[in-house]
Image 1 (cartoon, rainbow over the protein chains, first blue to last red):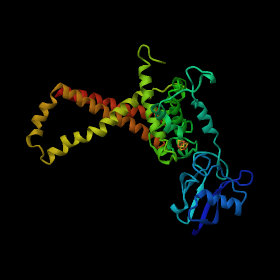
Image 2 (cartoon, protein in one colour):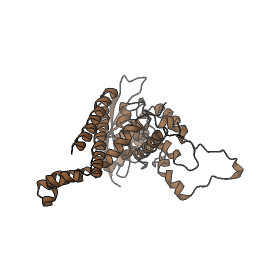
Image 3 (cartoon, rainbow over the protein chains, first blue to last red):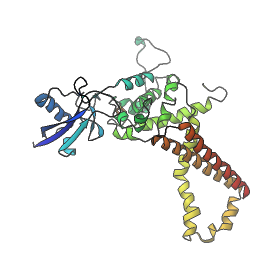
Length: 246
Length: 114
Ligand code: SF4
């Protein structure tokens, strides 16, 4: 195992003592196979206990360790040091307020996520003793990709529309709305429509596609939004026909 | 929140995008590049093309292609203006969709005159 000295330039901000964010450099002895998160953990354990950042699973499942690594939104557990030069700049995800150091305030996203009702709305609630809702493999495939989202917020950080328009519901929440709309057990599409197909919903997306490029779980939120645009546009136009849903 | 009427220009935009991606390059080749490099000989002469476009079905198809492409371009420009930080969506919409409407009307007139 070879060791490599890495210079981590980490953005620090502790609201109670720092007027504004600044960069602090740590020189970290790293193993070749480490990821950026390992290097941060080394700093925390061995060099500076005051550094704050979120992490939990270390295996791209929990979605906690999203940060900007050399300016690119990444999961720190998926960013291998071997892909970087000696100097690595680490900042909190952009487009969100900083809570502390690399920790961002997620409230805006949580509110938006709640607004699209991200849960199954069944036609009729059935008692547990009546068993499961059955689904065919094809019905599962219709939404599975969109259900892989781990709420890591890399897509919000990459999205130029969200940067310009903070009211934009945004990639992950819209992709999750689509996930439930596509679920055969769900009948909530019209209940979500008034948020999803509003001015600040899908129609604020200009299909730049940065969200899908940075998504660590290949959710393809941009693709999901395009599909929702099509169905919502059909809904909107047919709503003027006799018998159309308003 | 209310459902947005953006569905309407978006449909024209989506249809126009398909036209621009698949049909426009072929049209440019057939009407622009091919005659210029002398391909297909007389088949693309002014007279034959003129007679071809005189057909009503062809007129209708051309109208569809040009109008959809114009509305696509208009919507694209509206979104671009937004991306560039121009915060006047109402005014921008009037200008770009207005231009698309003028282009559409001009196409109708031009086709009727053939
Ligand atoms: S869609 Fe992808 S990038 Fe966005 S929050 Fe979900 S997993 Fe992360």
